[in-house]
Length: 259
Image 1 (cartoon, rainbow, N blue to C red):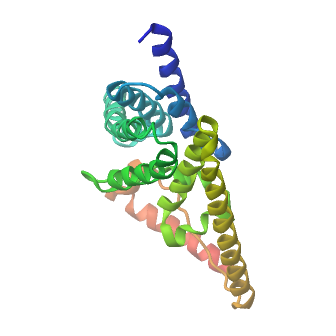
Image 2: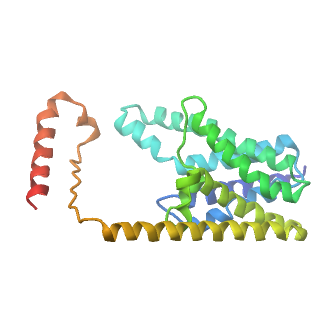
Image 3: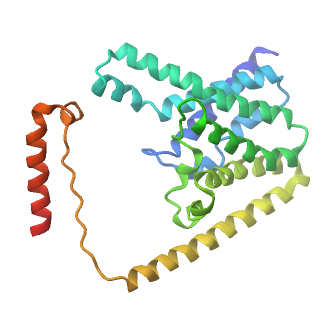
C-alpha cells in the first residue's frame, strides 16, 4: 500500500470520527450524522481485513475521545485524581470503546462485495455492537448514535418501540443506503426502502405527538416545582455540609410552594 493511500485512509477515518461526534451536544449538528460514516466506508474499500480494523479503530478513538472528553474533567475535578491520571483513564476508556468501531469496520470489509448486504446488514451490525457495548463488562450505554437525533421529535417517537437502537439503526441505514447508491447504481432500492422507513417513522411519531397533545388538553392543570440546590459535588456527601444542604432545599421548596 503506497503512502498516499495510507494517509488518505487515516484522514477519512479521522473525518468520520469527528462527524460522528458533532451530532451530539454541544455542537449538535445532527444532520451530519446521516453521512458521518461515509468517509470511513470509502476509506475501507479494497483494504485488507487488518487494515480495515486499524482504520475503524482510528475512527473510534477520535470519536470516543471527542465525545467523551469531559470525563477527564470529572475524574480530575470531582474524583480528585491528578490530571495526568485522569487523561490516562480517558485514553484507556477510548482505547477500549474504539474496538467496537474497529469490529464494525471488519464487517464493512467482509460485506464490501455485496452492496445490498452492506446497506441492509451493516445497520444491524452497528446496533448489535452498541447493544453489546451496553452489556459487556460493566456496560457502557452512553453516546449511542441514535441520541444525535433527539431534536427531531417526530422521528424519535418510534423509540418507545425500538429504544434508542432503532434510531441508531435508521441513522446507519441512511449512511449505508447512500453509499450503496453512490457505488452501485442498481442499489437504488436501498434508498427507496430507507425513504419508506423514514416516512413511516415520521408518520408514527406525528400520530404519537398528536395523541399526547390531546391528552394534555384534556388533563387537569397541575403546578409542578423542581428544586435544584446546586450543591458542589465535593460537598454533596460531606456530613459537615448536611445541615446547610437541608436548609437550602427547605427554603427552595417553601419558596416554590408559596410562589
